Image (cartoon, rainbow, N blue to C red; front, side, top):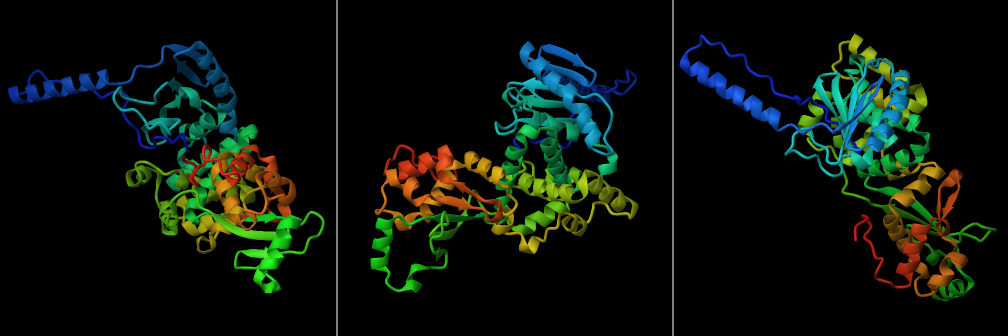
Length: 420
């Protein structure tokens, strides 16, 4: 996620080597040099934030009293909840540093996209959590608390799925952010499927309908591979068009299997900077397991794998528990994972991209319906099967983008990837 945990421990300070005064001169010189290096390393550590608020679950440090108190309240609320929801968790305190710029060392700043990480002193023993000043939401803190408190009984869980587990715990504990987390991670996961399949429906206003009928006199000519003419019944659309929304470069599906075969210690060695797409895939696998057997069921898979001598839970067990088949993991599969509210949230997360897709689907009306008539007469909507539909006129950022582009304004033109 934006809060990518640091999964291999970095020492908070280098150990000072012991100096034996009876060693030979060259050995004494070598030891002295090591001591100087250690002292320099210590001096390079980022200083702790100056304000401290103590809680039973760890100390919170920040550079402002308000921020420290806010995060301390969240820590007191969330830490026991994470411990209760996560089987095999550690019952221990964990300190939290809130920083303007995330860093362990003065000259080693984390990327701006990272909102937090967990610093480990050794495997399954967290030293502290770092949160960015403007990223101390309950989602990020819940996520990092999973990394900080997860116990050794989870050691057979593939490393990337610990990320998915952290997001699933966060969505369960921060209900107000549930739709946002799920929509965000589903959009991330589309990198593995080559995009997200959409179905756009719209009516043909009578004027445009007459023009269309004059151009296409034969009924079979009103269809193509992605467009289906429909009889008009009440609010049913006249035209349905299937579209493929591509949000990012495609990730080979073989990578998904490699991720499921990579342990937590090896994960950051193979992928020093984990792409957002990987977090999306991890969340989807764990979320589907959670929906079927719960977090306890996933933990039981880890215990069973250890008992049977597996280094990691076999990928086949995980995919079966998630009711997923990588051979059939495609753009329609991900589309069907959205609820209506999650799809609405996805539109708000990437309005320019969804507007671009809708404009492609509405092309048959170009030049026949002006911008003022488009939503009133054509009533375009994304169709979600038995989950209903989302009228584009009800999603302000999307409808504004479509209307401006339809009218030919260039000041709001965006690319489908969300950039200007």
